Image (cartoon, rainbow, N blue to C red; front, side, top):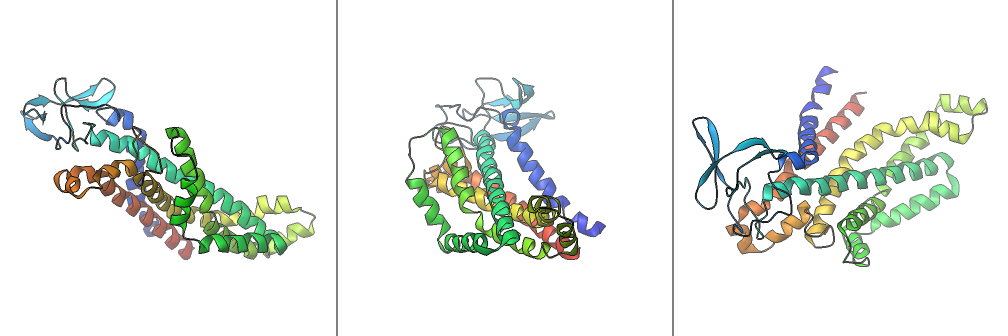
Length: 310
């Protein structure tokens, strides 16, 4: 048992670190996501070196400035005219490290919110289909099969293309959640339906029904708790998929637009080959996605192993 629980710690620590970093972006980032340093477009990452055990940052102007901590409500920074760019700057002179942290808020929150929407829809519809059967089951499952047969990526593009392009960042964020989450309910619904089909035949459910318990009570008290392990495992699978969906749509210009950063629209600046070759630090969002997705996959694997062992 203890050995099984140890499998949860590495992914949980990794995911907690990512989420804490984006939540505390206003404190950890040395600059605001929209702050521009027009004198330093495409500046390379600052070199950090120690002088008498004190860290110094080499500014793009060639001078070194001491790094100060807990200044102006931020974790670190340097006094003007010095600047510190841990991951360099983009074409507008905006700090990539700061935008990476702020952009993680959009990408991660989109994945979490869209997964929540899919799971709520999937759990509700799967429970209805599995518990009542008959025509609701046929209607929901045949409709779900039709949605699964459609290529989801092109469906996302088609739905988003019919919506207005010039909308605010908040509206674009809400639309992303509605589109991504509204399309992905089918798989969790089918899994929940299977659990409910088996659960409604359990002896304690039949006994409660014999004592006069109604369907709402049976679902809430006895059937829904059986679906929690499946829903939890599905969450660890859907969240990284939806993060990638947001990154893809924003990369193609169909998601959150500038100046609000997301990992997708940050990567859009690295579409040109010469940009990737000369300014490789612009690929920082793509590199950040890899350990994040790995953390979710490890957590999903640990949850699946825990369910098998129990």
